[in-house]
Image (cartoon, rainbow, N blue to C red):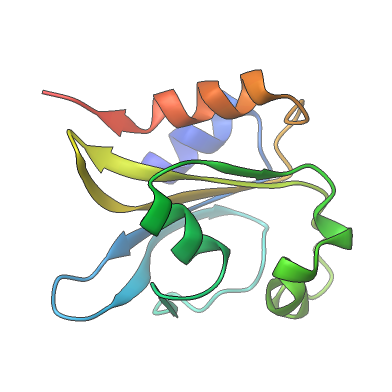
Length: 128
């Protein structure tokens, strides 16, 4: 439900919500919405390497406006199958100063500017 709301509000094809596991150093796919890469419902990725890990560790958003040409997304492009990844963006999911995970969007409309990235980042922050 969270992924669907974020996807719909921001006008993206796909939204994935990755949460950090407390018992390991992995991010696991907690929720997905859309026709994006064919991640298994129990998908996990290391929180120590790759773009999601970079967003998690730096606690700052990342935008790839031309994702198809990005070497960083090579593995993801393999998983995508027939789904064409045009743009990719991700932001840390935070509560106060604690990073809980990462929200990932594919093919967000009008995401070629920093304004879109800032709006996305601000949307997924939880403050008390």
